[in-house]
Length: 224
Image 1 (spheres, rainbow, N blue to C red):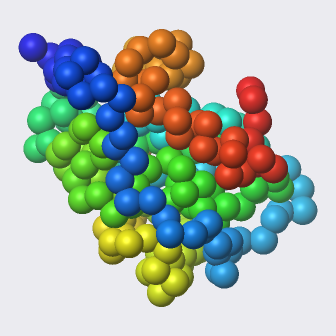
Image 2: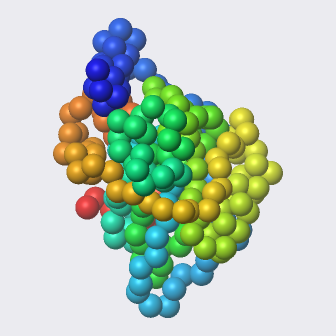
């Protein structure tokens, strides 16, 4: 059985025999604060990129596709080599890759720090080590792949800020790693949540993330 079908069969088992099972993990004890250290809003339109990993890329992509200022969000792989950037190989957990999302955004509309606030608030649970919900393995790890020193400083400072205020009941395990390369995933993984809204995996794991985005960040949510 392919890793893709294995994921789906596991999710169907959970839905069938356990009812609507919540995999939300450790919820924040309070609303996450704005980053103390952040990039300023740019004076003019432009394009910058952020690469984030937080479990299955279907849900992370779906969340950021609904964030104001995000131009595109692309599912893919980061952390490993080009020759192993294929779904079946990545799913073994032995390639060094993490399922990731490349976010292209307009810095005149949203800052890098605000993207991280969404990432930690609704896109995934940063306290789960090498897993998210029903998915387990290092390919589902929480990671921020920075491509500038400013991104690294903002990410590290925000994690330290959240840890200091103890908004999560468990330690944050998110890695902050320099981006070496991002490899887009196969076409059938792109916009998966939008194309398969009735898929049980999407219904029980990813649709709630988008709903939480709309509830917690009404000023940033866009229905596009």
